Length: 167
Image: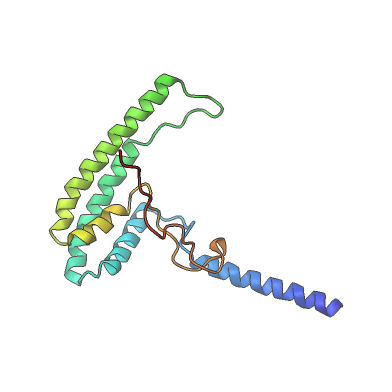
């Protein structure tokens, strides 16, 4: 009986160590600097879009510029966090809503501007994939199997995007 218990505990410990090693390989939850994230996105998108070396160089320069402008826009339009435990007044909520709408307009303008720049070197389908990377509905998913999602990819972002009712 003691041997069975010791064997079971040993198996659990070995499985735990193996799972922790695998967790290191998973990108989800890893803190990257802005520059590391941009370079990671460039590398991944270059592979996913099947870009030649020449296309990848042009794309990388344009994407770095786009990512910088996008970061500036997000910094500028980041909503101020209310004090903990304090409810916002209607005026404050109204101001935040208008600020959010203005930010969405600026984002649309920025994406339209960079659509034309990306379109010089990429086809429309490729550009669409690049611009969708920073949409609110899209979060890159961990591609590897990891403990957080069980024995399979998380599947969180698979399938069609939600349809909005047409009026």
